[in-house]
Amino acid sequence: MQVQRVVLNSRPGKNGEPSPKNFRLERISLTPDLENGQVLVRTLYLSVDPYMRCRMNEDTGADYLTPWELCECVDGGGVGVVEASRCSALTDGDVVTSFNWPWQTHAVMIGDGLQKVDLQMVDGHLSYFLGAVGITGLTALLGVREKGHVTKGANQTMVVSGAAGACGSLAGQIGRLDGCVRVVGICGSDEKCKALVEDLGFSAAVNYRSEDISARLQDICPDGVDVYFDNVGGAVSEPVIEQMNKGGHVILCGQISQYNKDVPYPPPLSDKTQEILQSRSIMRERFMVLSYMSKAEAALFELSQLVKSAQIKVLETVVNGIENMGVAFCSMMRGGNIGKQIVKISD
Ligand code: NDP
Image (tube, rainbow, N blue to C red; front, side, top):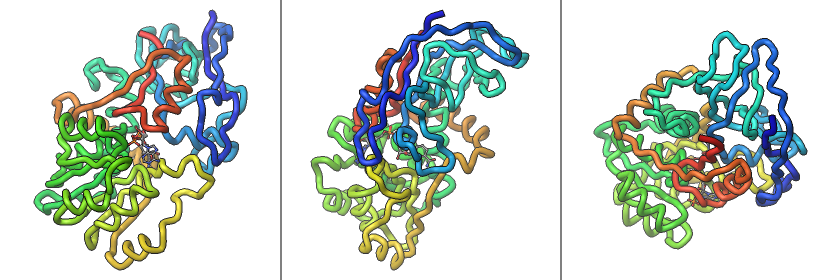
């Protein structure tokens, strides 16, 4: 059978912005003769995520991430349906997911490496397995719970950067549900600010591209900031930390503003910000969702309930077609998405 796949065409360089030209679409023929343990899957949805920027480098800088190889098929989070199986645990029609799904329209995969999913968890909305009821939701929920120290009745204010993105849009809603009295989002457009306040129930939103973050936060957060869910780092984060209260907590989730730069992770803070953290006893701890996978099953169940009962609203930006994987990835890296960026590959 003829299938399409996306391979890594070139690397942007550690200090370069990724471009769709770094990816190449190929047609190959796939022999669907299965060996024992293998399944043939049709890809339904693929995920594009910021960590993939590291995989474009020869050295990812992280021991848990392998680099994508030139001229080889790119992989990441995916959901698909089993079309033929020689794996006893899976049958035709099962919906499965994996963190290492090839960017390919059909693929032969090892059945044991796939996770069968329960469609009821997402009311049939299968792309949620890559977002709100998948690793993104886990990052938001467990990040807030493990590092946020949110306490009901404590009159806390939370600020979220990258707030209109996949993780940030969920983290802010979870912060509110867990008891923060004020949740403020920082993001890159007025349209995103409007969605945060009008659709997702954030108390207020700041457009970091057009507004003075410090001035706005002083205005919107009269009691200071207790919890900061940081997806972005750099020039957005320093003024937020400046507004933080004694004993506050920074959830160091990601630093996307620095991913196109050759800097270590986490990137160093200015002396002034370091001094603020120290003098105010603000905890700033790195959060890694993969370190909490023992809590994933219960957390996914909770996320599923929150989404199905509409206590959490899910936003997605969906583009169609495997030929748009590179475009979708680069767009997400520049802020083209509201909510989770998804690519739909087939019906
Ligand atoms: P998003 O859906 O949030 O997409 C990325 C967003 O980042 C863009 O939409 C853009 O929004 C924003 N952005 C890009 N460049 C900049 C910049 N220079 N300054 C400020 N904002 C910028 O992606 P995810 O939700 O998947 O990931 C969010 C963060 O969470 C990332 O840092 C990622 O690495 C991290 N992460 C961490 C995990 C962990 O275990 N610690 C697991 C998963 C994700 P805008 O328009 O607002 O600029």
